[in-house]
Image (cartoon, rainbow, N blue to C red; front, side, top):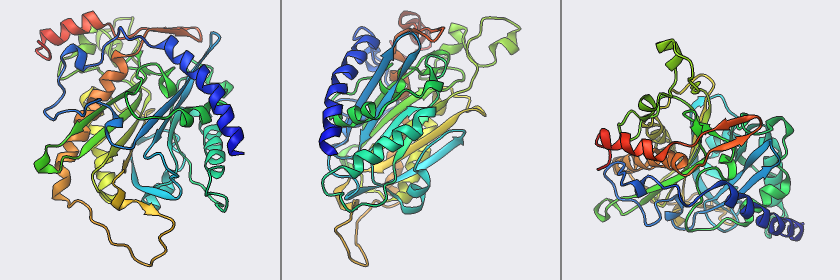
Amino acid sequence: MAKKILAAATVLLVISAASAQSTTSDARPRASDLGLKVGILPTGPLDAITDVAGVEVGQTTIVRGDDLRTGVTAILPHPGNLYREKVPGAVFVGNGFGKLAGSTQVDEMGDIETPILLTSTTSVPRVADALISYMLALPGNEDVLSINPLVGETNDGYLSDIRGRQIMPEDVFAAMKNAKGGPVEEGAVGAGTGTVVFGFKGGIGTSSRRLPPKLGGYTVGVLVQTNFGGVLTISGAPVGRELGQYYLREELQQAGGAKERGDGSVMIVVATDAPMDARNLKRLAARAWLGVARTGSSASNGSGDYAIAFSTAPQVRIRTKDKGLTRHIEVLTNDAVSPLFLAVIEATEEAVYNSMFRAKTMTAHGHTVEALPIERTTEILKKYGAIK
């Protein structure tokens, strides 16, 4: 079965890469390319979740016909067999209007045993099923009888035929097969292909922060799937207000033309190499939401807001071969995690911006969603002193 999975993944990898090329453009900048400095901490060399050593990201972008704009994004905490070498993990729920498969076992056991997959709302069961098949087929898992797939989502139904549930197992296998370290593609790719944020085109975004050596030198990386609403604010600049597109604009001004309804969701995946247990990882995940809040999210009733955090530190992994009744590990103290809290806030905020800056205008499913206008946004950021 493993051979069949890998063969299918190889075929889809070509399709995935071609689709991604058609939905992104190197001409659109990241936040840092505009001179935007979010917070005070330095980024990692890639300013991406893959700055955390061992973390890999793979994406399948599905662009088909006039009404299918969807995909899968896979985050692998390490390249090995995650069932045999689990990582400590935690889930924080900002607003529970969503479908996060596998979250209760993570809450109960404090570990993650599969890649973390992001996709479209109605495709969660299909993606979870494919993930189970993938894990059962891995060498070394021949005797495994239970797998806890961790699959999150946002609703891409405005730009895609979400009722069609057209994500296939091969799409899922491809995302995991092509996962790698290095730069992460952003914008309208993978699970962010059909998403909308603040009334503009959203997608996948990533960023990282690194602590100074005297604080441990640890790295925090964040990847987001943005599909939420509110009043866009970039490093304190009221960009949404200046552009005339923000939540409740019509109600406040009795003026038509507002496209921002405030609804939607966000998935946040947080990785760190700091040795943290599940308890403090949940606290880290909770702080990620503060980064989203800085961008102007209205955290609406219809928003599914989730953060998943894990540690890649080898000394805190849970290995199935260890059969002892007890285990001895060293983890950060409560006081030591405070700088990491700031790191995740800053990285999450910048990741949201990157998801917008990198996304292109998209027309599909009878709708057009404009990309954030770079030139006008740059003018606004200069006006308010966010960039020089």
